[in-house]
Length: 480
Image (tube, rainbow, N blue to C red; front, side):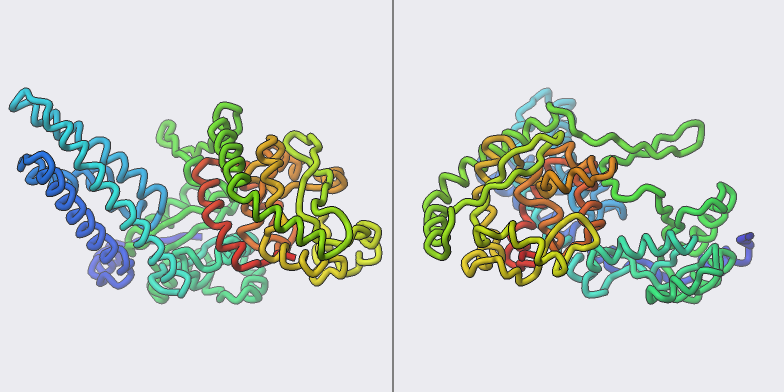
């Protein structure tokens, strides 16, 4: 298994046109530069109109662009990356006033510019951030339609290639990589990859020819025991010669980027994975936000909830609320509240419907077009209105607004030690399971999402899930 890079190859490849480069990057940067320049000019003129100082109007636009460049806001690693883009812009907005004021003080011994620059940096950042959000959403839509993607070659064993393909397909096409083929380190297993709809275009020794023939712009090397340091180094040289991105897929999946850092030790880059952030102090802001927002929603929705309760009572006999024992954080039991959507004898009829269970591959019991569901209950489930009484559970501290699905006690008894990690956080009114398909998800996928949430929890992740919940409720996918 050798990958040779000759001097003649180097000369030829350097003359290759820019065809493999991502064309969207150039346009993306141009639009960002123009938007940042306009934001800085608008902010500077505003400050001049208010305070009458031309110094800010002249200094801010070029310094804003220089600050954005210094904070790598136009780097390849930040483009289209959402939170990373925003963090870099905010860091630049914080650094700019202090830098400008210090330079000004060196010549004038006057700190007056600091106030003006702070007042100018705020509207500049306020304009720059929405522009980046709009561009990112547009880029994601183009990726979903198969445009502006990076032609990608996977290199490694078949089982790793299949796992990565499954992860990419779970994203629904909203990613940059367009896998064009696989170079297998175990070609005897090529049939399995072809069944997944991908061509096997060679072995590890064919990378150079395949990259050239397919116009590949990204090479992803998958975990394999036979890929030692010397082999990986030669692969990276081949990628560098042909001016393509070289990515190493880690063995561990479902780890968010903020938890990963590279720690070089004696020339060896070691990947540090930060432990999940589950301490009481780190989750205190979430606790306060959960209870205060749930209490506000209960006050706002009090009359609609009373109306729903009345309709439930009029539609069928039985109480308006359904009470059921569920398992919360650390295995503590609590009584979960929902609007009743089934006949009062629904639990007695469950055994008769076991053969209709849509989730027979796991511990959940879900039946499409369940005959036990009432007329009003069917609408409440599709619209997720049956979940509103769980706001009371959130106020009491039994649940969170965002978290894993609240399990039943008999489900928890069947949990493996790995799945029990779901119980390290409070169950949620919504979560990754809801915005990703709910009851339509296979059991293994639902568990993977819940464990990923526990390991990668952050306030920003909660906010993203809350924003996605509205569209998930409107779609009604898996709500039955």
